[in-house]
Length: 540
Image (cartoon, rainbow, N blue to C red; front, side):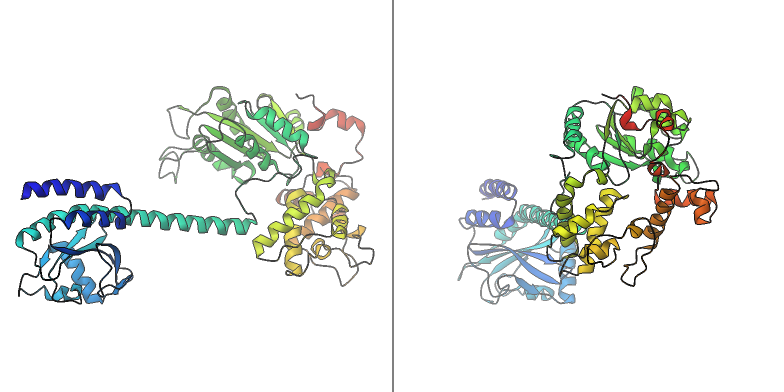
């Protein structure tokens, strides 16, 4: 008899491991067992401690009995405790003839008390608990040998339930991840994770041609452009088009890292290398191994860090802070800056050898004021993004709005345009896009922005929409720089015009990311020849 059952058990194990969902394996196994046991039904229940429930997991041979209904049943705290004790200490329970079932587990009895049955706990490796019930056919009883066979069946059923439990956990995690993704995309105002480069077929066609030309190689790329022109999007486009697309891309803002932490952040550190280094830390270069490292604002790196960066670019080896073992890394470098690195080299603030190393293939991004051809498409894109982000109706800017937007100089470039469209959507509150108020423009019948507003002067009208303080200060400083032709110090400088100390003005300009060089529109030719802009250099 047992030899025969061993053959059956092998088939049971095969079916238990073949199917991912326990409902499928239970049906198949029940059909196998009915030929050898006096069965009318096989029931698998899942214990849910969080909700104090017995949930129906699978049925074999017939529909669920009234005990469970279609989904399960509630359990009291005493019943849940009895199930946990059974899991630890109990085995198969069998009502033979007039032998009473365990009093603490009477709630498991089917409504038809005349049917004989076997019950056993399913102890899953993951810690989950289930119950296997075998209900006898009407007028038939289980024997002791059937109870022994039931003991052997508990393990494959437990494995099948455990696999089903892990599948449900994975499905829940996937659903939570999808919900987080949707929430993040809504906050970003996007429908997918793809990076959109507006103007790739128009004003940025030459830029994208250079991206395609350099992506397949492994040479460093240096992206020039004012703040907010989309340098990170271009860096990601290079990565996605390169053979390293399956690897990581890491973005580091060099200007946002305190000078005393740059070495540790870029190159990592060993445990105990300095006070507070309680564990070994892998720097950005190690984390970007076999991928791309995007160093934004590379001009902010101190000279001593530039030396270490040059070594990595030359031979691909680094040492963590406090370490003695060289580490080999395979990283493609893409750098970006809004500064004139050529001038910084001449002033000794940027290493000449590093400059030649990273400027192998430069890409220059034009500012938004030179891309007004793309303004309608960009304004529509950001208007749709704002609607998604704030849950508002999708409203597109009118032709009057576009003319208003193209009349502005956009010192903050595309990033500022996105902020303006967000503000216009919020002010309009789903009824319209109030671009004029978002820009802080006076309500003039001509619908044109005030020149005084764009030069940083407050319009003498009650209709003026107040700007955030940092934005107002930034525009006021920029207006002073326009009037003083970019000069900061001296009797005719911006500091004197604003009646503040030049050092204080420079500190505020650094905080607000204002580059005084942009305001030297009337500088003499000799100055331009001495410090040529990046676009004037003879690059490939």
